Length: 428
Image (tube, helix red, strand yellow):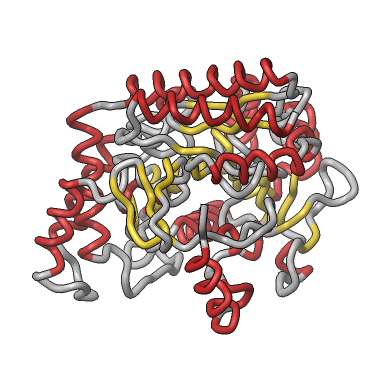
């Protein structure tokens, strides 16, 4: 499979941008080699600069749940763009998208639109601190909440120690107010609250993690989160930037039976355009300016194009309710990958929820970052490139999730499984 034009484009990109990319998630650092440049998407497929077609299981890292260039989204964008691309003033489309979010997500009574998932989590953290008058935030190793300084933090030497900076440019002063705990560890969570409970403003967690691979929070862990935050007067923030409208129309919280105080959203709610949101109980949200005193603003928040794409996407999801079919497809894909690995004698574990899944090259279940980190990333890299040669585009890291769309057909799933059988034999 020739990728000469992608190689030439990347060579030029490296002269123009750090590492040749605008996000490290695109750099193929986890699999080696050079990224592929794409020029077109249609339904479940991507087409690169050299004309190669791939079955796409990334979907722009989650937003494209309807597939690429869905007719309803394209029509909505065409109608919106001729009216103007940005006003910096209120529009009816903002009301309409907010109504869809409030109606769909049980925890949200009021919502604020922003321009990215990172901006949503950053704002929710600030709101939690302003509402509670406390400084400390709890997060979990392996959960990614965007490149917010206070959340770009690694664990200290013990389970309940304060965090340390995980990137140059993140100061010790910023990191010191963040506790990093182990995901799905009820005992560790209890110990942190026993030691720091009066200082904790909020716990932020992915109820279905997507950046250590797809890993679900256990029922016991979620119940402990809800109980401990309520007992200690802290807020519970669900980061559903990935899982919101992906695993269910009402998000992961509608499946898991736990209602958070605040929820952050992104990806799907913008229909492929930059969009994020955070929302929760009215009494908390009313602490934001101009109703309250907690500051947050954004010139392009509620952008007319992004709201148009988001409204179109959520309306299709609401009216067609494709989640059972998506679950069937993801289950069939997961089972097919398991069968391919078993036939080749390759150790594996699979994590999935709704229309997202991860195939782990691991001989143990993956429940947290410690178990995810023990996966065979070299074998995954070989699997990735083998699937590329078969015309299947997977995440360029063992620690990212695959995303299915309503555009994927049974034939696409079957072709993917057939390719996996061949590649698994090669990498065994």
